[in-house]
Amino acid sequence: MPQIRSEEELQAHQLQRLRWTVQHAYQGSPVYREKLDAAGVGPKDIRSLDDLQRLPFTTADDLKEGYPFPLLAVPFEKVVRIHASSGTTGKRKVLSYTQKDIQDWTHFFARCYEMAGLTPEDRVQIAVGYGVWTAGISFQMGCEAFGAMAIPVGPGNLDMQCQFLVDFQSTVMCCTASMGLLMAEEIHHRGIQDRINLKRMIFGSERASDAMRTRIQELLRLEHMFDIPGMTELYGPGTGLDCEHHTGIHYWADYYILEILDPETLNPVPEGEIGEMVVTTLQKEGVPLIRYRTRDLTRLIPGRCPCGSILPRHDRLLGRSDDMIIFRAVNIYPGQIDHALSGIDGIGSEYQVMLDRRPDGRDYMTLKVELKEGVALSEGPNLSQKIAGEIKKQIMVSTDVELVAYGSLPRSERKSKRVFDHREA
Image 1 (spheres, rainbow, N blue to C red):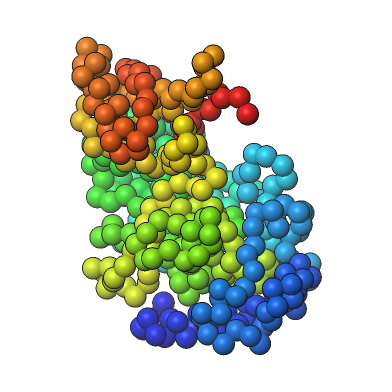
Image 2 (cartoon, rainbow, N blue to C red):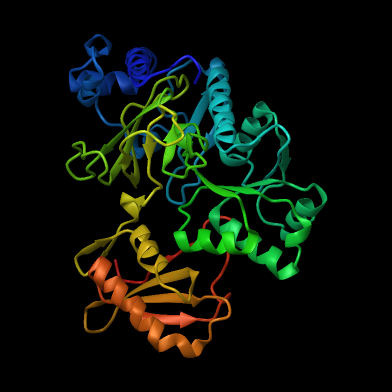
C-alpha cells in the first residue's frame, strides 16, 4: 500500500471510495437503488465515514433471492468470471467478477504472501479446492503475481502431497487447518520430516484451534503459521493476513471497510469487544457490497501492530453468529469450546460435541475428546473431570466427557465437522 502513508490518508481514501461505491451500486443495480431509496439515502448524502451507518444492510438472502446473478451492478459483457459459495442449503450464492475485480483480488492476495515473509525463492504447495470455489485459483493467482513458485495440487491425495513436499522441496503449504493436521500426522507417520523443507503454513476456510496449531507445530517444527480469512461474497480468500508478529489479522482497509456490530441490535460494539463482521467494499465493480452481514464473529484489535503497518487488525474468527449452539438457554460458540480445551494438558486437538434430547425432555451434551498421542486411556477419569470442570467454569454448562484414543476421531482435508445436534427440531 505504498501511496497511503497514514491513518488519515487511509480514511480519506475510504471516504472517496465509499462515495464511488454507493454511486456505482445506485446506478448499476436496481436492487441497491430500491434499498437506498427505501432508506432515504443517496450517493450525494455520503459526506463523511459516519454516514456509512445511514446505509441499509445487505444479507445472504439478498444474494440468494437474486440468483443466479444477484446484485449485479455492471452489464453482462463486463463479467469475466463467476464463483459460487459452498453453501449446503438452498441456492448457492453466486458472485460475478469484472476484469478489474480479478486484478484487485490478485493484487491484495499477493500482499498476503508478502506479509507472510515469503520471497520469490519460496515454493508454495496449494492444497485447497479448485473449481467454482474461490479458493484454489486465488491462492495460485496471488502466488504467481507475487513471484513465488506455485504448485497447484488441490486437496487430499496424501501420497502426492508427501511426494511433492519431498521432491519439490516446497517451503509453504496453503490448506485448511484440518488438512494441515492431517498432513502433519502423515509426515510424522511416514518419518519424512527430515526430508522436507516446509517452513510455513497458511490456513484458510476454518478456524484453527490453539490445540490444533500446537499439534501441527510439534510435528512439523514450522517457523510460522498464518490465518487467511476470506469469503466468496468479499472476493474470496486473501482479504487479510496476520504478520510474523501474530498479533491479529491485518485486513486490507483500502479495499473494504469493516464494522463490528452487535448481531442483535446492529449497533457498533466498543473496540476490542466481539461482534459480527459487516463489510462494505470500496473498489468492487461486479457485485459491490454495502454493509454486508457476514455472520462471522470477531473483534477489532486496538492500537498499532509491532510490525509498524498502518493497516488495522481483527482477531481470528470466533465462529459464526448462525453457528451458535443454544444449550439449556446458554448461547455457545464452537470457538469457546476450543478455548476451554486448549489449556488442558494430556488431550489432543480433535473433539466432537454431541447434543441429544432424552426422554426426560432435557438436553444433554457429550464432549468426545481425543487423548494426546502417548497418553493412556487409564488417565481418563482425571482428565474427564478436568475437562468438565473447565467447560463449566468458562461456558457455564454441564457436559458429559468421553475420552477416546489418539487418532480415533475422523480427519478431513477440508473442514472438520465438530458439532452434531441430534435434538428434535
